Length: 274
Ligand SMILES: NC(=O)c1ccc[n+]([C@@H]2O[C@H](COP(=O)([O-])OP(=O)(O)OC[C@H]3O[C@@H](n4cnc5c(N)ncnc54)[C@H](OP(=O)(O)O)[C@@H]3O)[C@@H](O)[C@H]2O)c1
Image (cartoon, rainbow, N blue to C red; front, side, top):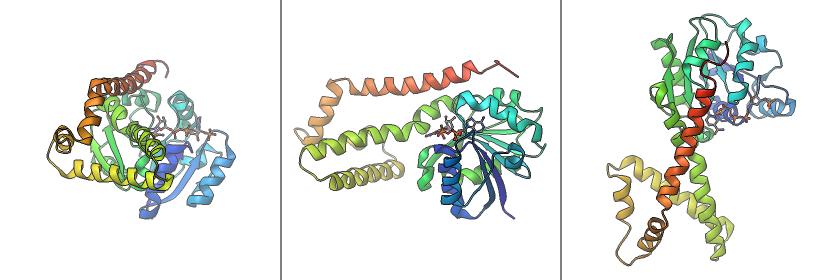
């Protein structure tokens, strides 16, 4: 029998992970519980052939791994709901943004094995850049289990828990930045005469090519774009305008906002309740 997983939460992130891990066949008996939205559960059951339940004991009983995939404000309540049914050797993986390992460990029974993860929605296409940080009681076996879950949906790196706010701002929220840019590029291309289909295809392939190049090249990102900027050329015209209008600073500030939000969530829940 494969590794069994119970998901607490049936939202975007739970679905991204389920859709990513499902084809590997490594994980069996996936069971999902949410708060109240039956339609969402039925949809997941239908699409991914997972078990669904409205009973917390049923969701986590006999599971090797329990994935906490609720919004930060709902995490404490969700933990209180599963606490009575937890067994000692189960691995808890939290994908919840902001809430630190120490807080989660404090909310769970003593010596619970916890790993915190920050995947992104590219899990749906097996291309998440996931960071994991390792809780106090996790050993090699559980780290390997967590790595197995997240390598089936992309890349995995281990970071210290205090680096998670940075990873969240860069990789957790990151896909949204690229989609934001994609939207601008697509809409502009349509305004300039391409069909919506052509515009989308050009932008997607251009992003894919750039990401592939960035990941295989040893050159810094600045060199990669400067290579395309011949003096008096089209790219120089665009990048010069971006620099002159301080777009780089705006973008940097936006990432700081994401970082600060993650840090604030962590701080809010730091020692608030048991
Ligand atoms: N989306 C992303 O790109 C992303 C990336 C990295 C990390 N994350 C993190 O992943 C977590 C989930 O995000 P999401 O986008 O998947 O949120 P979401 O779509 O709002 O889903 C949250 C799910 O949690 C369920 N829920 C709430 N309280 C519950 C409780 N007490 N017991 C059981 N289930 C409960 C909700 O139930 P109902 O279905 O009944 O409403 C819903 O299914 C967040 O903490 C987020 O920070 C998200």
